[in-house]
Length: 194
Image (cartoon, rainbow, N blue to C red; front, top):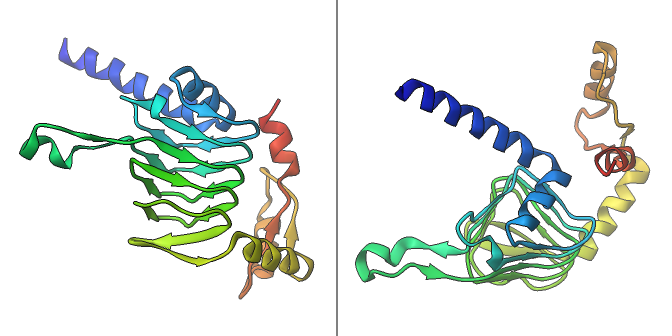
């Protein structure tokens, strides 16, 4: 009997992960749980505190990838008998990189980039780029966008292609030798939003 229960639990977990890997479906599911989410926001494999998701607010035009958002901190549970709670507010036009952790009682402003693996333990002002653990501001959003807009004109550009041939892959590898490139994603956004 235990094996059957474990089997169904595993199936449920896989279905859950699949549902939350679709950025549009994830937004719908988290809204149903009480997360306030603005328009044109995408959540890829994001884990939002399941116990108190209603304490999270995410703005519009925001992209979060593989991050964890917490509304509690149980570090005081055993010693004091209380768990700390805090709201999390993420502004508009924010990118949060993979494996980042956003801790409770944090506000992230508008036009912000959170680098991959960053632990966000304090408020982040508007127009910032932050990285690391402990996190630190390393630039401005506007400067980052400007630098990348210039590079798009000189670096290799690629069209979205989910069916790359070996020749396509080799060509991409050669073009990216010693430089970065850019992938046109307009078609991806249209596909996701269908």
